[in-house]
Length: 173
Image 1 (cartoon, helix red, strand yellow):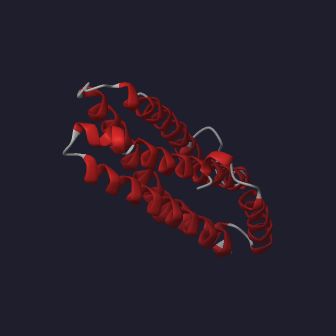
Image 2: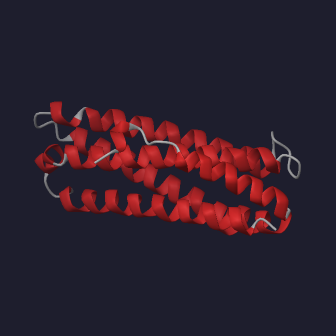
């Protein structure tokens, strides 16, 4: 059974959720003041860098899993297609969020820029949480039943190898 892979990915989701909560907290903290976004740009950028690295590694691990699941599900329809499309949507939203966040220091009182940035961030947070919820509640229980123990062990080893690679220097504190 695929229990080891599921537990490993659930721990990844826990790390991602902690970063989402941290970013959520900073946004709540600075929401009241337009200038506060600019003064917290470095903190927000650091969280986004860590989130980006965690997300890149996590999606790479999930792609290993999805490739293995193609023997159970079609690649171009059903759950694998939906989850892959959501990965693309998450990265697109994340890219828009980063672009809007990068413009914050140059806003010089443009009250619309922080609101636009916050809108992208809140959208990305919700998209990622909804996606993880589907995986946690639908996909992962299926995996635990479908994946045989030998494939589970192989996937776990390959996922650990992804985690063991050095992080992007931008994510380091």
